[in-house]
Length: 546
Image (cartoon, rainbow, N blue to C red; front, side, top):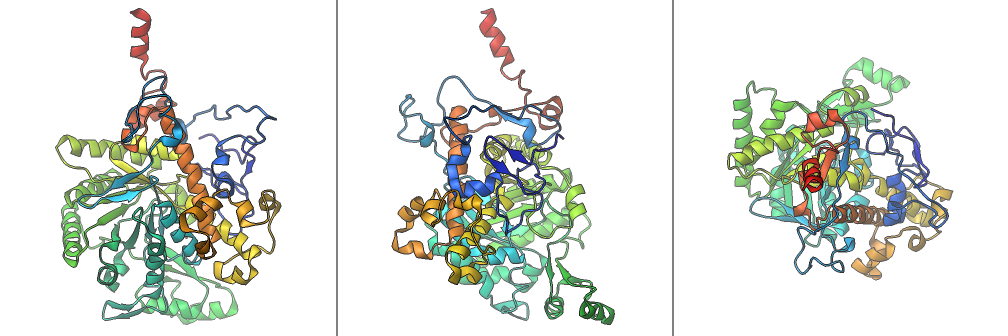
């Protein structure tokens, strides 16, 4: 694969570290002072769709090499004429068919449809401390935008204030905070999704959530993720906390009960201890046993009262992918998120993240192929979301097209966390009394921010859009990180609208696989997409020969 440049002069962006396929740095810091494309888009919004210094420059594309198989080796087609999938009230006229009128709203689910304003959802933001610190920005921002947000695994299990007696939760203040924060601004678009793993199931998270929140919450079963092939991890820097987590039933490494570990911790040779989750299905030895256990658990959750259930699976091989799609379809789940290798937000072992699993484009291409097999058998295939290192509006279009018509959403992990960090850092400087509460990490605004102003109204291009939505009085309660997320989402929406208009698709339902093509022969072979010059070549020749 060709190396990705650390800077883009046309957009005026620079990566602090080495960029990965998504355009984000491989190591994204919450105290970063800028300014990758996503970071800057959280301030300037749709302005970042265009080259900088308008009227003083000309600009040409630098993306001329398409080497290897990845989302970078897929290109988007455009058409000369026509208008398809027109929203209600729109006519096929040049005055009506303008990109701001492209409809980016959609829905997913079986009997109960979950609506969204933008085909994007967050990754699972669980027990990592960074998710807890910036949750208010993430959740309020997601609610204002109208997209689903996922509370990841282990939130109850690591909460010292949670009370669990005989396998049942009596008190879960951190989980309550996560759910209530989103619901405070929820207006019918988006959703709050709570994920459960082995430990969560043992602790009775599903029972607690349904009894307290009913059908306001979607429950998500977790099979894995694209960043690692083992359970989730966090690191703790307190021996007392590590002992607490072991008593809660977690795998803790190194073992904090061993005298030699305690001594090493006291002397400073060990400064942190890792908490791990268990692997699922280790006691099952066949596909049929997995299927039976999965169906049994879904049936149990339905009996508890859950009307909407989803599944998250990782970048396992083709067998597990087929199992996930078939079982989720048979169980009539509302959503299946398929996470390819290349993403990751938490504490994944680095070399594991670098070397395990199926890269996103390959996994997603196979997901489409397998879904199509079920569709040809007359099955109503489960709605899908694609995840794994996706961050920009072109990624959204490509992923939706690659999996069309089965893919309804694109799941973004780190990209949607960046505005939360950035807005909180700005808020901590502008309002020092809030610095600790919002986890601000700056002492002063860097030039990358002051270039745009010194107040939230000046800094965030989306400020007044949020104000219009919530009202002037309520703005004092909106975290700046949420405003930053709203601003980034506006850029993603406008960029997606432009790409859809160019493809003459004015609603999400119109996006299809034929709207993208492979930029090299290897990508053509692996994805089944048509090669650039072969797509419509027969039509072109008929025009010339007629």
